[in-house]
Image 1 (cartoon, rainbow, N blue to C red):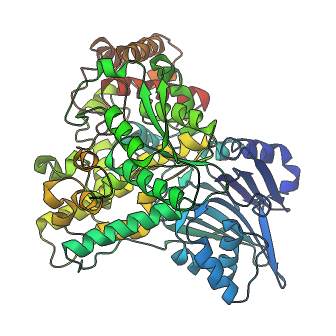
Image 2 (image 1 turned 30 degrees about the vertical axis):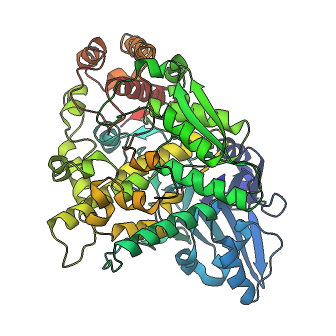
Image 3 (image 1 turned 90 degrees about the vertical axis):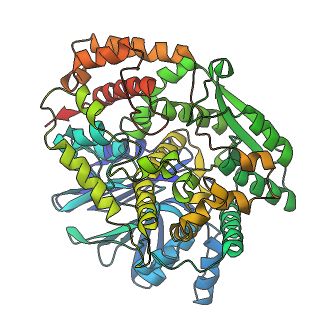
Length: 613
């Protein structure tokens, strides 16, 4: 895993812009702490920072391959999980390889198949290939959007990078926030419209998109993959077997690494599946026992309160699974005051206000894991594709014609200064409609199946993207690569076309997955009700964010005060967040997290010197 960046500019000789190139590259140092490289020509610069995972000697980037009179150079962030399949196909076509890196295979595949190579890739990736002869740059991003790629079109040029801060390191890109950016932050945040970089002039390549910059302009931009509705033909037995195979194959493919690898283990269904498959594979191949990690908070057991979204705590299930698979397990215990302190770093890691302590806790967790490991495997995205969230099962919420994790804009508007945002409701409504209208259906789909396809697209394009942003930015900020097997596109395609009666088999959330794991996981794990990523229940955290937000709104120089109704924010503080009558975003962001979100808005505006336009 790595960080990539590039700058094409036909208005200047980039060989004279060494300081800017160094600044852009430095912003990626945390993503790639092990090595750096630059490809520099008069009007073209490609930059790379590397986190070494596979083939240290032969995976150096930028990587150039010359074939006849043609020269191709790649910078690549990601991991291919079908590298050996592609290598065999390319060897049979007459190509040879210096090493065993997936970078070399990817670039060779691009040389051989061009843009069509994207159809063949299984992995998580964002990459850029420069064709020197034709003066053509191709950018591409993986189907699920696990790896980020931002860009900005400039006069006769293009600037791109793995992170927003990389673009802002170039003086041609200014940190300006317009009315649409405010809508993203306050009406949709921490979610974000696909393709929208929030800051004016910054865009993001959408999942499964590629783009060609040729001459001095974008000449092509298209999706190379879409979810299509096809008839599901397997019966229950066949479906269960197929789900078991696809999950197992996805996990096994993602265990390949030349550096130490571990698994996140929460005691929930998804992380338990991954840890079990990984442990069995380690035993079968004679590797040392698998290492697993979980996260918790000081005194959390003492303050835990059962809720609809969090029915029980994780400890006993983690212990059960660790004993079942024989893993070397470690619990990372986080301090509650530190959780508030690390809100700053979390906002900087994401380049935007994010999921508050849900982000900062993951950042702290990853930092501890990185002390011993470079790669981890995690259970994100099973809930989105197999219907694990409560809003899939509550019919009132299911058929509510809006985003299920943020069902009312009232609290969001009430926080803002009057008249700050124009046409906000229309903006949010259009993004909702654009998403549900993207859901491909079959003529025979009844009302429930159509709605479930729409809900699938909403979760895939919004809620899952927010979690993938979180996972990538917090982990890579610590130089830790985290893989997400449930994002395997084959699994996503299969789940999209599975009837709801199968997904909710036996009347359970993720019912078909539970059935597929019978006899593999302990019954207690299979029957356990979904419990989300653990958050703190300690009042010390609430006190910390309250005090900090109070200091912010008492400071006349605070940039947050340009945006919010100070009296309304004071009500939130004085009520310990109880004035927030519904969650800010999903099941994890309630009163304390809203206060933390506002803190992050202030931090972000200060640190990035955001200018309102």
